[in-house]
Amino acid sequence: MARPRKLDPSSSPRALLGAELRHRRERAGLSQNDLGKPLFLSGSFIGQLESGVRRMQMDQAAEFDKALSAEGFFVRNCAALGKSKYPEHFAEAAEAEARATRIREYTPQLIPGLLQTEAYARTVFREYQPTALESVIDELVAARLDRTQLLADPTLPMLWVVLDEAVLRREVGGPEVMAAALRHVADLMRRHRIIAQVLPFSSGAHAALTGPLKLMSFTDEPPLAYVDGMGIGHLQDDPATVRHCELTYDLVVAGAISPTASLVLIESVAEDYEHEAQRS
Image 1 (tube, rainbow, N blue to C red):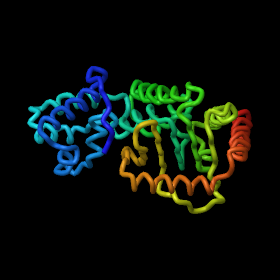
Image 2: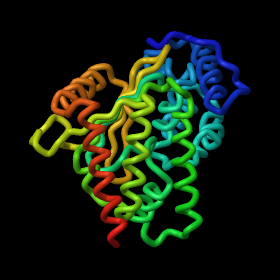
Image 3: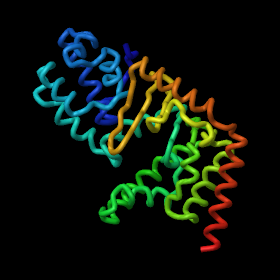
Image 4: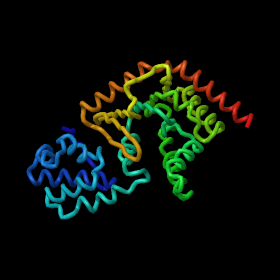
């Protein structure tokens, strides 16, 4: 069960919802498990909602209104919580990412969002939404660049990424964009701000063939895993599921080349792209 912590209800819609959920649950004489069981939610999940750790979803808000006779309080205030500059499926993960002390990530196709340059991110979003207005793309790019500010702190979060070799070889935005994007990753490695490894094609089949994986650890919260796909994403907090994701990441790391060798490879590929850009 999540450890209770003091919340300031005025600090955010999430804190307001958490404080009110705890107040109404205790007034109803229910434990966290009692409230969660008929809603197919664990007691620990209820505790994380009350502590402001997890984001309340609209369907959960509706169930809490019914279970606690809240007369629509949770639905009304959940609407305010739902306003985010990130896509709905990623909003809670982005908030967790901002609180994390350690992030470990494997990406099979793209440079991770936290490491992307503006030109690289713009190309990715334009490919995702080929008919979107330029203003929409601008907003998406701005939100992604805002996320990269997490790395402005010299030490936290500790970021460890494993890039599939396909990330280096897939030409996103042309050779000039790729050269700059890879140089950016290499620069972060040389400044010891991130740990990065490359999983080479020669490793063959591996544990994360099904897609990308992000693991997040916190000072006073249980670890989370985030897995995503085409326009969908799932934040996992079940301990057994998180442990399996951690094992998957460890197996990927075991197949990757060392950070030193990875830096050499990344810079070599960047140089190839630079030569290609000069010839064109």
